[in-house]
Amino acid sequence: MDESFDLTGCVVTPRAETPQVGGDQQQARDTVIVGWTVYAPPGHPRMPLRTTDKVVVRGERCEITGQPGDWGRSPFTGIHGPVQFAADRVTG
Image (cartoon, rainbow, N blue to C red):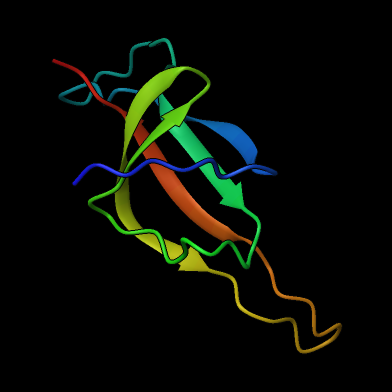
């Protein structure tokens, strides 16, 4: 069953990779945006997110790659930190 829900209040930053060049020769390459790092607010009723979940970030359909990380509670303030995950564009 495909259920969708809104996850508002997120901070989204581009995640980039610079393609590796083979051999000993260094060549200048353009940086490629491969997806986003998303910082979601804690306490959403649909948490935790799973690696099998799909998300739409800035209009692009993405897959959650890797295990979402929960920053936990700060020992200094007691405030719960964000849930961080990588979202990669789905191609093909």
